[in-house]
Length: 404
Image 1 (cartoon, rainbow, N blue to C red):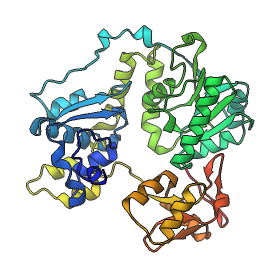
Image 2: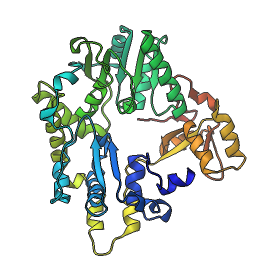
Image 3: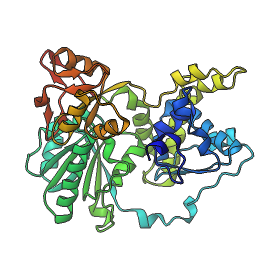
Image 4: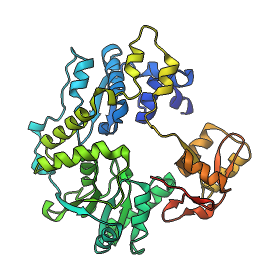
């Protein structure tokens, strides 16, 4: 099985979009050795709207090449279909492209499970007050910092926090408790980042979503009345603006989302979704869909493999992983300290690692809160910085690190 993860030589392979596309544009043999096994396969892309806009055209081009020359069938799955058809037709002018579930065949009323209300601008105190009034409610904000700020204002009993500042094993435990409380009708107020929007099966009667792109808002709505047990009129998704300015990363999506919501009474309609993605792509233009100018490079006479590989990184901001030596993670960290470095160990350690930006890593290291081993692996030395409620705190003794 370990070799299968490197070679993709088994019938069914589950991987990430990052691994898939970065392998296609890689120059190292260790990443490229599996690529021949993609030929003749069916490749299913879940949550296709999550392909980052700065690499949209290179990703669509890669899919198109697989379809045109390597007998691949590509299936893009999403509840909010991005406007990719025109780009695919540009790269695949002679290949038929069809929608498996066309808008005119869907019974949209069956899937209309929520109502949307604009809640205006709310301070974190005002937002927390509204959340505390409800027994079961989900609040999704745009940044990890906002998630922690809102959570600290909630009544502790029955309140939960979710973000990537918690390691994967911790999040799984938290989600299991959240699902149990929802099922049993117990108080359950959750503040989360967008990590809960895609592929997390939870059902809340009410959702608050900080203003974001329309695709994110509709994904958040998928966590409200998910099982259809309540009427749409009593299942409300409140859209609000938080007290912090949105990060530049989200500005284009927020702007397009705000415009489309002003133009469409039914923001979940196929027309609104189509309008949103067209505006988002038109707003940025083709150059913004290939920020690193990958396509001109690969279309040149001499394919610069190394240059392309260096430029193609779906996750833009480099991060460092900090391993948390608590619970079952403690024994795994001890093996790491003892000099063990097998792939299996690092896969297990991945359940107890938190990815943080370089500047936050440097702040924690300079404060003496990290133990950095010779192989570069980092272990949280000051375990008081890891909370059982909110995960890793990025406040070092030498100062406070800002984070999103």
